[in-house]
Image (cartoon, rainbow, N blue to C red):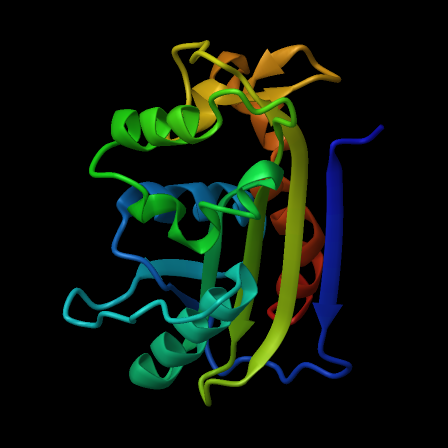
Length: 209
């Protein structure tokens, strides 16, 4: 079984951008660097959103939040904008922590501990990492969307020193590794985020080439 699934939804006709500036709807420099790596072979110039612009994530799905962030940042900056939203969905917890993945505790250790506690005595430990990405034009219209999924299981104890977030407890049976045990290159090739960006990037590159 392939641990990855991708959904890709481009607009039928994309207008050419007036500039090659692409605002990343985040204040996280690490996420900016990650997206710059994905788009290294394009002519887009990526920059962080303004520090004083905060977008409340009120969506009920990852796609909702990605679209919300991309649209609002695009309109505020009058530029093209890209946003992603991702998290962990656990079958036995009815999809939790879901869109609240980053808010499931104060620290990564807290969030992992809470998940493990909630899964005590659970036989079904199936889970998915999900990433949704959206691109908006300067008018705030969503013109490209993509979603990537990586299927796995939640371990009973953390394993591995790499990665971040829930990586030490997210195990991919096909590779017999947690995300925290994978090299950055391997994780990128199988992860929800890498999968989502792989589907989206060709269309994003094509509108500014």
